[in-house]
Length: 279
Ligand SMILES: NC(=O)c1ccc[n+]([C@@H]2O[C@H](COP(=O)([O-])OP(=O)(O)OC[C@H]3O[C@@H](n4cnc5c(N)ncnc54)[C@H](OP(=O)(O)O)[C@@H]3O)[C@@H](O)[C@H]2O)c1
Image (cartoon, rainbow, N blue to C red):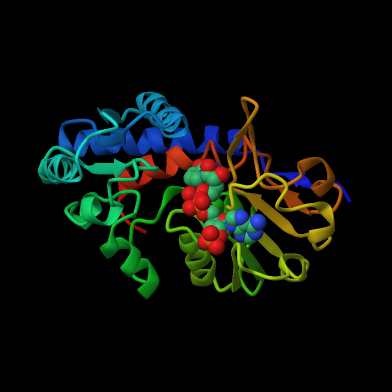
C-alpha cells in the first residue's frame, strides 16, 4: 500500500481563499480589518518563525497581525500586565501568547488575565475548560488543524479507534478532546506508556505530537491507518516530524508529511478563530 499524502500546503491554499472572503466580510461589518496580536518572549527560533508565518499569511488574507516582541528577561508580572492591556483593547480581536515561554514565566499566571473572548489559541483556563465540557470554545491551532485536515480529506473520526501520542496542553490533550467530540474512541499515550506499539497498531487514526523524530515507524502502524504528524523538531537545520515518513507511507492509508502537513494549516486556524470566533 502507498499512502495518500495529506498535503497541507494544497489544503491551505484553498482555505486562504475562504478566509480572505471572511476577512472582507469582517472589514465591512466593523469598518476596519480584524486585528491579532502575537506576544513573543525571548528568542526561541521556532516561535519566531511561527510569528513571521502568521504575520505573512495574515497580510495575504487581509488580517492586521502585530507581533509584540519582549526580551527574554521580561518579568512575569510585566508580561501579565501587557497581555491584560492587549486583551482589554476594544480594537483587538485576538491575542496569542507564543510558546515556549522562558522558564521564569508561568503560562498560567499570564494567561489568566486574557479575556476568554480574545484567547484565540485556546490556551487559557476558560477555553480549555469549555473544550473539556464540550461547549463551544477556542481550541489550540495545531489540534484544530489536525481535525480540519481530516475534514478536508473526507475522513470522519466517527467510531474510529484513535491513538493520540503526547499530552501537552497545546498538542495531545486538545487533539484528543476534539477527536472525542467527533465520536472517536480515544486513547492517550505519553512517555510513560509501557508498550506504545501495542496501542498504535490498533489505531485507525494515529495523531502524534511527541516532538521526538522516529517515535513512529512502519511496524507500529495498522495497515491503512490515517497518520497525522504534528512533530516539528530541528535536526541539523532541517525540520523533522515524529514519523519515519519513508517507511510509514508503505503501510498507512493517509499520511501527513512533516513539514508540509499540519504546519501550513496551523496559522490559518489561528486566523480563522480571530475572524469567526469559537467553534
Ligand atoms: N505542527 C504545528 O503547527 C505544531 C505546533 C505546536 C507544536 N508542534 C510540535 O509538536 C511537538 C510536540 O510539542 P509539544 O509542545 O506538545 O511538546 P511537549 O510539551 O514536549 O510534549 C510532548 C509530549 O509527548 C510525549 N512524549 C515524548 N516522547 C514520547 C515517546 N517516546 N513516546 C510517547 N510519548 C512521548 C510527552 O510525554 P510526557 O507528558 O510523559 O512527558 C509529552 O506529553 C513538537 O515537535 C512541536 O514543535 C507543532
